[in-house]
Amino acid sequence: MELGVHGVNIMVAATGKDTAHLARRAEQLGYQSWWTGDHVVMPASLPPGGPNGPADPIVDALVHLSYVAAVTERIELGTGILILPQRNPLVLAKQAASLDALSGGRLLLGVGPGWQEAEMRAVGVPPQQRGARTDEYLDAMTSLWTDESPEFHGRYVDFADVLSHPRPVTPGGPRIIIGGHSPAAYRRAVARGHGWFGTGTVTGLEESLRGLEKAAAEVDRPARLGRLELTFMHADPTEISADAVRQVADLGVDRYLVFATPSRTVAAAKVFLERHADLPR
Image (tube, rainbow, N blue to C red; front, side):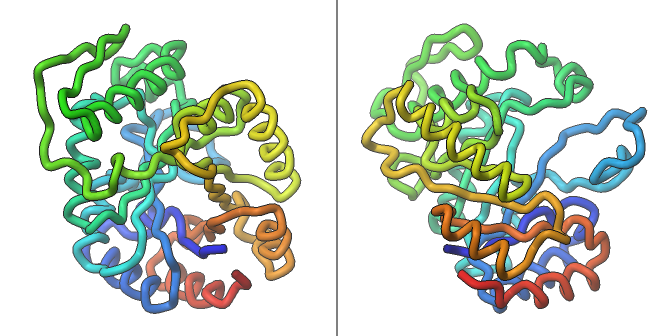
C-alpha cells in the first residue's frame, strides 16, 4: 500500500516557498502521492465547526499541483476531489493534459459532483444537474484525450471538428479517480474511473467497499480501466495509527492518505509529515 498526503493547499501552504518546502520534504520522506482539496468559493455564512471557514485560503488545486510538479521529481499529483461540474470540461481537459505532460505523467485526476449548493449556484451550475454533468464531462474529456477525431454530443457538452493538444503522456489520459460515498458514486467509479476515493472511518470504508461490490454487479466496467484502485483518507487525523493503517491495508486499499489540513501552519504540517512517514505500508 502506498502512502500519500492530502490537503496542504487548504490553509497550510498559501505561498510558493511554503508549498515547495513541504512538497520536497514529503518526497524526501517517501510519500508517494500529494493530494489537493478543492473549493472555488465558500459560503460567507458558513457556520463554525467545519474543517475550514469561508475566509481560510484554499489554493486552486491545479495551480497548486503545477507548482508542486515543478519542485518535485517523483511524487504523484492528485486532486482529491476536484468538483467537476463547476468547470468547463474542454478547458479542464486541456489543463489536465498539460499538467500530465509537464509532470511526466504524474497526474491523478480525482473528481466528484460536489455537494455545496451555494457554491454550485455561485458558479452557475444547478445543483440537481451535478451528477449528470459529471458523467457527461468525463466522457467528453476522454474523447478529447484519446480519439483521433474527438466528438461529443450531449445535453451539456457538444463539440466536433476540434483537436486539443498536447495530449496527455499517460496512455488513455490521466487516471480518473472517482470520489463519493453514494450508490451513484460507486457506479460512476466502476463505469468511468480507474479508481475510487473515499474518506471517513474504517467502518465507513467497509460499507463503501460493499457498495462498490454491489455497483460492480450492476454496471459494466470497460476493460481499458483495469482493476479499480482504492484510495482512502481518514477524515479525523487523530484516528491515524499503525493498527488502523494495517486494517485499511487488509481491506485492499492501494493508497492511504494522511490529512494535513488541521495542522494549519507549515511548521506543524512538517512535524505531522515526519511523524507519519513510517506508517506501515
